[in-house]
Image 1: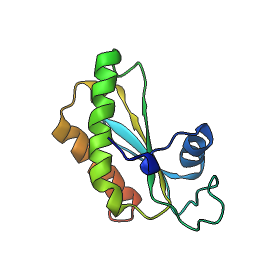
Image 2: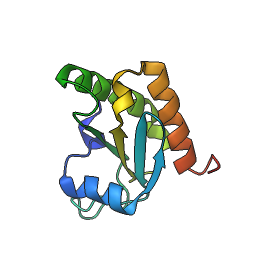
Image 3: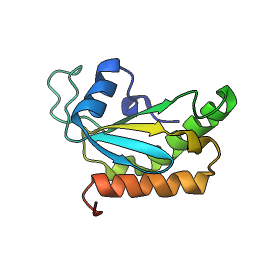
Image 4: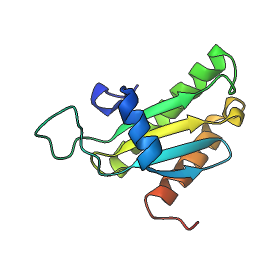
Length: 123
């Protein structure tokens, strides 16, 4: 489970990450990263902690499969929050193949996408 201060909850924050951030697509997921964003809901803070949100549509599978994918992604992102710049917004969108993927495959795709977004990988 992600701590409360690391969760994206507002629609505006999801929209900011998706519309203004950079995107890296992999076969199982798409990661949107808007780095260096300040928290507009906490005046006086220059850079809050990195926050993450997840989008898992019905195309991934039924409710049980969607929740399983969301739990796996939450666990993976929680382990990688320290690598993200302070104040960044991350949205992880699961693609239809994510429902059939195991934990290791999701981890590989997430790591590759984050590496590309953080400047470590080539296009």
